Image 1 (cartoon, helix red, strand yellow):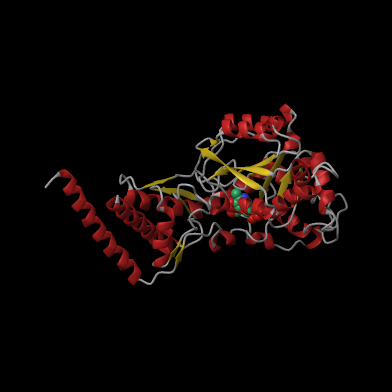
Image 2: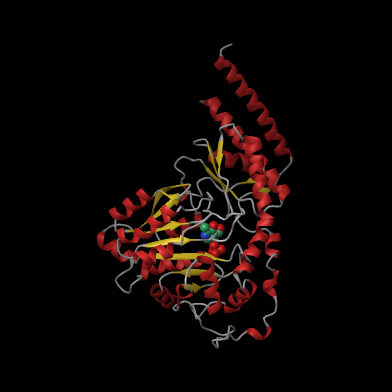
Length: 430
Ligand SMILES: Cc1ncc(COP(=O)(O)O)c(C=O)c1O
């Protein structure tokens, strides 16, 4: 027999073994889920102290009664908390309700439909005057809900590749310089969703100059959702983009976002939007058409619970104690099952909530379908790309934080089996 026949029969044998294992998993009647990028119940329990009675502290030093209407910018101690978390000045921070995603949606709606600098400056008006379309740059793979906001406002999305140090800045600079209707870029600068990468100093420095190359009203949406969500002893450094922008006088073009969703309660935290104080003021005037003020009681609860930087660091260490073993176990199983087989690449994140996997070309949707068929739900293939279209059909996002350890481990083993089975079948068909 030739060498080629040898390897053909080895592949056939491996497929048979994998198929048997796959059917054995099916017989277990599994119902597992690796899609949920949210804190587990055990993590939520860490913030039970938020519910301590507020008693006589409802009236703040500046006379604000947190139980009453008003205070669109947020209470002063919450603006300080956001400033500490996101590397801003308190005057640059607006504190919102329970979701930073809502602030992003509202900010883009404001820019697109009303105009960041008053009547006549709406992105949509500029686009219709020139017969073009508003566009956003989307480093990929990225966060699906960012893309949903763009789709909702009919903003065209342009993929930009992201590497270990952040987006390809040559591509970013060329695209914004070539078209004044490119009005924004989505960035998750630390422990990016889903790749876990943190932007390098060089990328941050170049990003600060992008508003100068772009058309009027351009905004960097700097979604620092995982600013304090470390998984190692040595947090990966991230340069302060606001400092860089102030130095270049481009702070007008920067909008920083963050929240306590994955610090305290995912459904009942507080959110932050940071920018140049003039931008903050205009945005809060826009918000005043829809609300008289945010939930200041929740803001007060949070500022008491996370009163100092040390409180925040200690709290995040407790989260790490719960989720780091889940990440480690997932990575260990991937290495044990698939290491050296050249069928899957995956990231080893130093923080955040996700592990990003790339299958062989054209197999992500097949792997997701194989897993679903035997009771393991994975994030839909394509979800990490605009319009749900992964041009190479390779990326799958794993979210290890939510399931209990035994379920997580079982689901990762099933995932690995599906990856290898799909790969062997592809190789045999080639
Ligand atoms: C990058 C990123 N931004 C924002 C959010 C959602 O934030 P919030 O709960 O504050 O709306 C998530 C949640 O997964 C996320 O991954």
